[in-house]
Every structure is written in C-alpha cells, then in structure tokens.
Amino acid sequence: MRVQIPSCLMFVSACLFFFELHTISVSAQCLSDQKSSLLSLKNDLKFDSSHSTKLVGWNRSVECCTWGGVSCDETGHVIVLDLRNESISGGIKTSSQWKGLNRLEFLSFGGNFLSGKLPESLLQIPSLLGLDLSNNKLSGRVSDLIRVSSYKLTNLDLSSNSFQGSIPEFIFKIPTISTLTLSKNKFSGSVDLDVFGKLKDLYSLDLSYNDLTVIVNERGSFSTLTKLNSLMLASCKLQKVPDIKNHTRLMMLDLSVNELTGEIPSWIWQVGNGYLRFMNLSHNHFSGLQKPYTFPFLLDVLDLHSNELKGDIPVPPRRVYILDYSSNKFGSSIPVDFGNVLRSTLTFSISNSKVVGVIPESIRNASSLRVLDLSRNGLTGSIPLIGNLKDLQSLDLSVNKLTGRIPEQLTNLTSLSFLNVSYNHLSGKIPQGSRFQAFTELSYKGNDGLCGPPLKKSCGKRMS
Image (cartoon, rainbow, N blue to C red):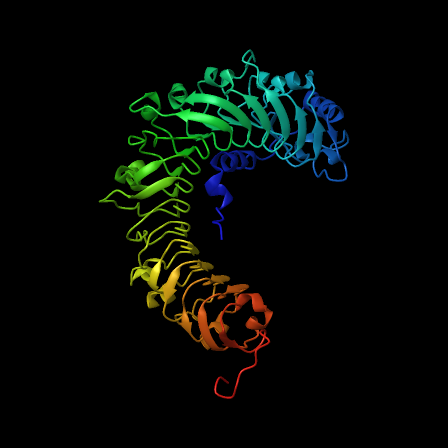
C-alpha cells in the first residue's frame, strides 16, 4: 500500500493556476485583431484534431471569446489561453501572434507533447502573469541569456519535462515570482537554497525529483521568506533539514527521499504556527521523533514511511486523513486507544514495521477508514470485530501471527474490494458472504487451519 495524496494537496501551483484559469469569464466581444492572432497561432500549432476539444472549434465565423480555452476582458482582449491536453506536438514558433495578444495574462500548454527547447518567445509576452508548460517533452539546457520581457510573472510551471543543466538564471531576474514549479526534470548540480531568498514574494517552491543537490544553510536568506506556503524538496539529496522555523505561513512540506538522519526535530511540527496541513518525511533515515513533540492539530497528511523509526508508535492528531507509518522499526505495540484518534482517517498503514502485540479493539472506532494495512508485522491475538467499518475498501492483515477464526461480521463490509489475511495462524471456516465470494485463495493461503471455499480444503462437521 502506498499513500495516495490528493492532487490539490501535492501540486499547489497547478491547483492555483487551474483556479486562475477558470475564474475569468467571457464578458465582451472579441476584437478582430485578437481573433486574427489566435487563428494565426492555431495555424502554427501542430495538433491532433481527433483529440482536440478546443483548437478544433476555433473558426472565424464564431465569436472568439467563446472559443474553448479562451477568456477575454471587458474590452475584448484575450487574457487567458488554456490549451492544456490538446495533443499539441512539436515546437512553438517565434511569431508575431504573441505581440498581438498584448494583454495575455495566463497561458497554459500543460499536458501536451511539445518538444525541443524552452520556447523563449513565451517569456517575452510583457503582460504575462502565469505560464504553464508542465507535462510535455521539452528538453535541453535552458540558456542563461534568455531575455524576459514580463517582469509581472508570478506563476511558472516547467515540471514534468526533460530540462537539463543548472536551475535557469533568468528565474532570479523575475522578482515577482510567487509559484515556481521545476519538479520532475533533469536539472543537475548543486544549488544553494538561499538563492531563492531573492524571490521575496515566493509562495510555493517545488524542486523535487531532479538530479539536484540542494545545499541548506542556517539563518540564510531563505529563512527570511515571509510568504512561503508550500515547500517541496523531495529527492534533492538533502543532508540537513532546511531552516524553516520562521516560516509562519507554511502549510505543505515535502522532504521525502533524501538523506536526513537522526531524530525528527521537535520544532518542525511548529512551523506554520501549528497550521501545517501536509508533511512528508518518508524515505529518509530518521531514527525517531525528538521529544517532547506536538503534532499540528490541522494536519491532513502525515507520511513517515520508509525510515528507521524505533520505539513508541506516535499517536497522530485527531483529524489526520492519511497516515503512513509503514516500513519502520518500531518494535512496539499499537496503543490501546489508537483507533479512537483515527475517527476521521481514510488511510492507515503501519505494514512492515516490526509491530508486536494485539490489534487494539479501538480500531473499530476508526469509522471513516477506507484502507487499513497492518501486514508484515508480528501481531498476535484475534482479528477484532470491525464489521461496522462500512467504508472499508482494503484490509491487509497478512504475514502476522494472528489466531482464531475470521469473524463472520466481516461479511458486513459491503465496500470491501481487497482482503488479505494470508500467512497467519487462522483457523475455522472462511465466511461465505456475497462480498467474500469475490476473493480468491490467495487471500487466505498460508493458514493451515482454514477451510471452505475458495480453499480446496473442506470443513468437517465441527468446523461448520
């Protein structure tokens, strides 16, 4: 089981950009020069008309402010051009139509098949506030000599391409940048986090999943940013937790897949003045949580999986929705009242974490659970009566030391689509509810005492 993060939690910049694109409505008749510029652009773009839902409908006989992906201001000038997912391929020509669209504020080519180098002409649209080139096939080194005409640019998304080389220098010449998303490229080399301290309006920064080595300094200029809300530094070869103690507005933090060691510092839970909503520290080498610590009460996502955490299992805040403690080395039992604090939790995993003892009866109070994964531990005792968890879709208790019967009450789990209780010491007849008929013998194998369908072993009269 792996935690599925809601997209608008993970990709703040994309959500903000999407919001801005869709909150501007048509309010005037399109000017003739705007229509001509758009039709010229259409002629220059290579796209698959069988997959297009916007460009394919652009024609001179229709009012252009009603065209798909186009929004205008009250004077009839185009201010939003949303060409996401239009199957556009090839490059973007440097042509005059961009000069004609002289009030364009938001431009998105996200989710297409654009190739070649970064189209510099787009950065020379002086009115541009937001540019989205994410999820394309753009590549190559980005020139340090790019001339940027828009010094109003606030949102720049170059994520999920194949750009190479160092972080582009032109970015640091745009003081208005607020949301910067460079994740999932092939940027390389070392970058000092303090260089981003020049961007005083920075709200969201995502450098994740490149080949970068991010250098962290204490009390550098990065620590002075007052507006930062989201910091995503997954897979950045970090060896030190960034100095974010003074980031009072921070709500989302991802430091996963790095080289962080020792205890998770207790101060990290206080960033954002206790309003932190998303925390991912997975895939590091943390050994424990520095005490005393207090989790933020508004935390929605807490992901600590694939570390080396030992000792007591941390009790999460009561409103956490996604909780992943899997692949650790706790060597302890689940607290008796643990289920009482999971009443709002949708996903809980603590698989492969050397957990011992029994599954607490309080787990039946985690009434919102969709996914429960306690597999690959040393749990003993019986399976609790959790037939009341009506929303449970996935239950994995495999590879433990559980004994006794599979409770007949589990047949009440009408939403259950995945069940695995294999490799325990369970016995007796397998429940035969309608939902259970969908599960194969793989769900039960490795329990010598179990009998009945779908296993080939039949039950004697006593077991029936």
